[in-house]
Image 1: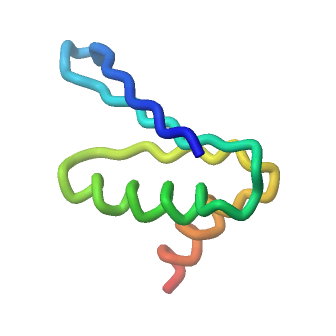
Image 2: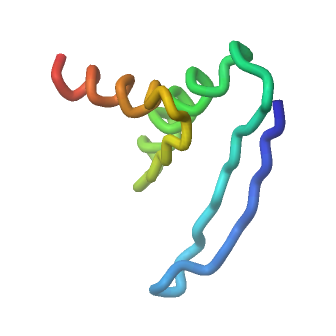
Length: 68
């Protein structure tokens, strides 16, 4: 599994951090890591979690959290 971190300038001059979690192998915990990392980082500010998985598992995770 690869974890890549990158920093950019935001539109209003603020710091934007991009964290990419990727692996070609299935079942290694990418969605679980993404979900809980997003939740942990949300306590420090705004977080945008983007789900590129065709199964939409990350989207389903957060949809369940809102419904509960």
